[in-house]
Image 1 (spheres, rainbow, N blue to C red):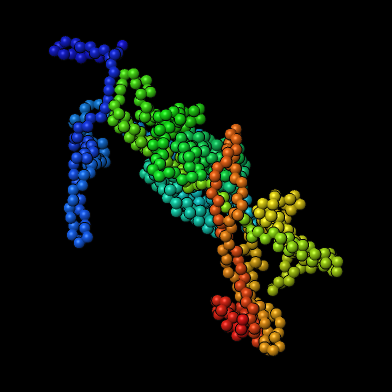
Image 2: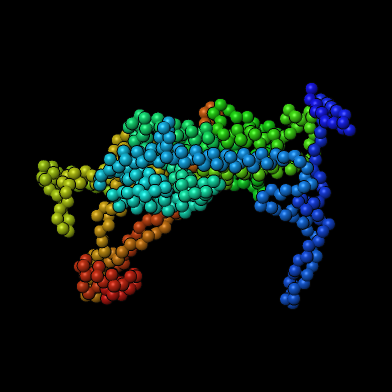
Length: 579
């Protein structure tokens, strides 16, 4: 039995609430504290007509409510405490609590190693493996960790190349305010801002080879890997389960500190993974509709974090008729509209609290785009024939000079000789082009690289990663090559190689490939409509011209001439000949 007592004219009065049903609805009365839309009122507006004279006209327009920076205290609002007051209290507590936790986790506690210290330990392990000849992957991993640590403090690094890369990574990250701008309580202090920047940067998608280096450094000391996993567990429970694989888990793309999942995130990815949102689409409206019609059950699961629980707490604002109190409480349509507006606002405040950890969402920005994928100019037959030429040359020299002689001989250079033996270089050149042939055919769709060509393809790919540093590639090829002497003209016709041009090459599909997207097990493969796009590559072209010259210049003379004149016509004219 639910009742209450009060006194009236010194007589006790008992009120039994067991049969009570209430109705709540919005009062349309306009007050100083609550101004509703008034389409009957007019607002003056100034309009300029053709002669330039301003004319005042009356335009019917609703008067918008006055917005206060803090909740207004109206003596006519009665003496109840609005639910928003509880929500505001909760928001303030949530922010302050999580802010304190962030600083504790960053520095560490007796039961949890500090997050920054953990990152520093991983960097020290990788730094111990560093040398001038270390792989680029290791250098990138070190630069990644240095950039993350520099968000909160100075970091010393002896290698200038690693430091330059770290500065570039940080600059690129901070150049995208969508990812790098601290929100909510993270803007309260420099310490909180640095935690936001550090952790957001550590959410960067890493290729498997980089992630594996970080995993190895973590696993080198079992307690370190255990501390790392505890940090991940804490993040998952404070916000929500992690939506991407961590560095010690399987995946082509992994994160050192993965972001967290959310209901709204799954909606965006399910609707707009391959297409942009339609005009007028509103994510929160879609979220509300799905909660109301039951397509989205907000009931937290066994692995749900605080964020899911907070959203579940807001859900009753959207369907008060399904709450236990509904048998005693009827809410009017306008009041329910107010509750929906409250849900929207509280959803925003709740998401802001977890802004650092929640996965950044993209709608329509990541359609399934398929374009020609080439890592080298696909001149397969050219490469094959080059390889055969080097094989023939090696066999020929071995036949006439002997293989032992070739293993002792070295290729000459303008200054000195090459370190490798002539025999080894001949083998290497053959393999370089044989690998290029295999890669080109693979990328054109002829099938996988055969077992016999795998080692050659690996050699070729290693060289392709650093070809721009090869002294043979970056040497100056400019020269004038005599073709024939014209006895009548008394001049030599020559071919002048005058320098490089970068030429764009567009690649597009004439016959489109089949595209199938495989969903996670046990769902069957499903097909979506990809967007096929043209791709542009830059190839290098050596500019040549056939000219008549009185005297064929040597390389040094011709290069000096080219350095004075920059265009094809100017160089031809300076040669003193006629094309």
